[in-house]
Image (cartoon, rainbow, N blue to C red; front, side, top):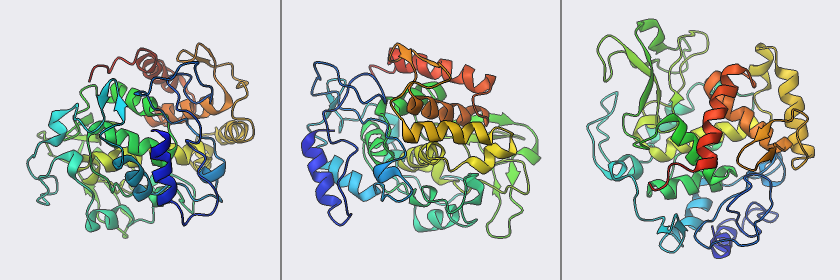
Amino acid sequence: MTIRLLAAAAIAAAAIAGSIVMCSGPMRTSDPMTGSNPPSIPVDQPHFSTQPASGVFADGGGGYTSAQCAAALDANASSDMYNGQPINQETVPENQQTHSPGSPADGVTSPANQTKPNAAQLAYYASDGYLSSTMDAPFRWMKMIDGQYTGTTEMIIRWAACKWGMDEDMIRAQAATEHGTWIQWNAAGDHRDSINQCQAGNDPGHVSTNLWGYLISNACFQSWSIWQTKVVFSTPNLGAWTTWPAMNESTAFAADYRYGFQRSCMNGDRSGFFNDKGTGSAYLADVANATTNPGGESPHKFFNPVTGSNATNLEYVAFACLGAHFSGAWMDPDALSYLSRLLAHWKAKDWLPK
């Protein structure tokens, strides 16, 4: 994102009190999340810094809306570059192709990158009061998720980075780890062959998600999208993740949800979930460190191969929330194994060329 892109964002956000701080300085090409800048910054490598839970991303701040980031991005899409290519040139052609109707058969056949969740899908997403997000009330960040954007794959990645204050290469690295082709439509994972693991939701506030038999006989896939987010659990009292079928049909919704979830986790909104797992105190202590001293070295001495140094407090929380996406736990062995793969992708940028 260039400074003129920031200016467009400022115009879009004129009604919000205070200044936009996320991209107020030169954009980085290395040192993700540290805030430092290399001596020379190629103009075709704009990046967002991953922001701490302060400023617009604190509980008292306004955050960024889908429309603000879209207006800022679209104004310069033909001139902003990534990997030497304008970001408005599609790098994943399949994401711009029509497809068969989704599940349930709702008639949506438009390309995944050109599909926004419709009103019914957004109502379903909100139908359980966001309880199935496993975040703490009042679900501030989860309520901002709407997937209201269309564009190329790179534009959608940059839009999600803008909206949630993430480094773009974090989003790319997780996509490379979860689903290397970056093809959104019917990107399925977590195969299950028990019908009890393919249906969920006793909550009277919304209809159960049922994926039994979709794409596969006598089985289902629980996780969907480039970023592999679960859309169904087998725990009846938890209910269904109310993101189906938008999670499959819309690349923007998939990115919006994954990194809205990431932001919520980084801001400390998942304490109840981690309390149930016995790690709530450790989680909140790490979030407090990231909030009060984001650039300070984490006491965990976790090595960040992308920067070649120990992780900062902010990096550690970002990494731990990424790991929890895979393992459901706070820096357990499975999360650490997942992070090892994700950070290797991030360091190598092995999604290039794409």
